[in-house]
Amino acid sequence: METVDKDLYERTKALLEPGDIRLNGVVVHTGLGDDDEARLHQATLDIGDVVAEESSKGEWYVYSGNDDSRFGLNQHQGLTIAEDEFVWECQQLLREGTFKIVFYYEADADQEAVVAGIEDLGFRADSVEGE
Image (cartoon, rainbow, N blue to C red; front, side, top):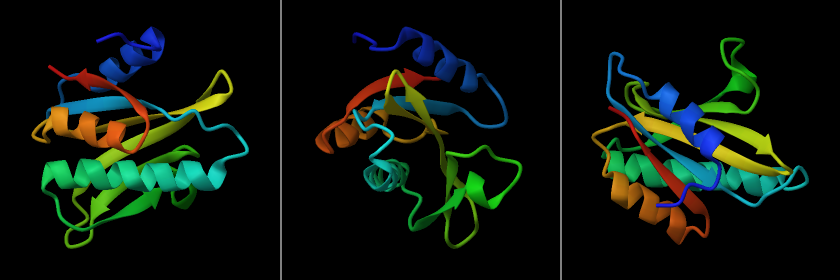
């Protein structure tokens, strides 16, 4: 696998360091710029659907950094509807004029299926596996 943005890959890998739960992640190269906010939002939801499906978490909703001072702007969480259980977290980062979305989620998700599902949406995705 050739990683497009090695620095972003390494930063994402650092987020996955062992903690209470094992995490994997993905760096999504959207090609979307500052003027594509609505498409960026929809891409985040679509990618969140892929992660939730491959994590077998069921129905979920987005909890946004805009809603809570503990999170940064453009930082979002997918939480289950039934129990507010963690499904995924992401950060939308503007790098060199286009958005990269860094997702991380529990390592029990089918990593290959997550990457394939994101690529089926038309985005380039770099798999980042935790320890």
